[in-house]
Image (cartoon, rainbow, N blue to C red):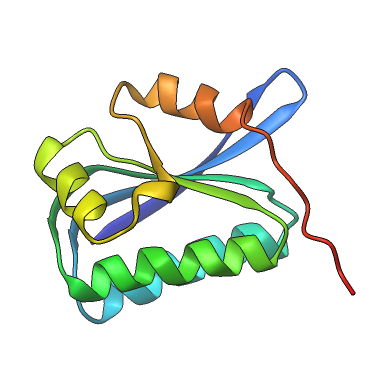
Length: 126
C-alpha cells in the first residue's frame, strides 16, 4: 500500500487529498492511513478527502480504519469524505454503513469540489 498526500486549493479553501494505492487490509496499510490523516489534522487541515480510486482490495480492517479516521477527523472539527470511483468498492462501503462519508462516484476533481464546498460544522465543546 502506498499513500501520498497532497494539498489542493480552491479559492480560499484547502482540501487535503490522501491517495491510496494498493490493498487496504490488515496491518501496515491501516496504520499508514491513520498516520496520514493524523498528520493532516495536527497541521491544521480541516477538509480531507481519502481517494480510493487505486485501491484493489478493501478488507474488514480497511473499513474499520476508514471509520476510525472519520471519527478522529470529526473529533478534531474536520470534515472527512471518501471518494471511490470503483462501483464494487463503493457498494461494499455502502453496505457496511459507511454511506455518510462517501462522495458520490465521479471524477477526483468533482470529489475535491464536493469536499471544498461542503458545509463544515464545527462541533460544540462543553
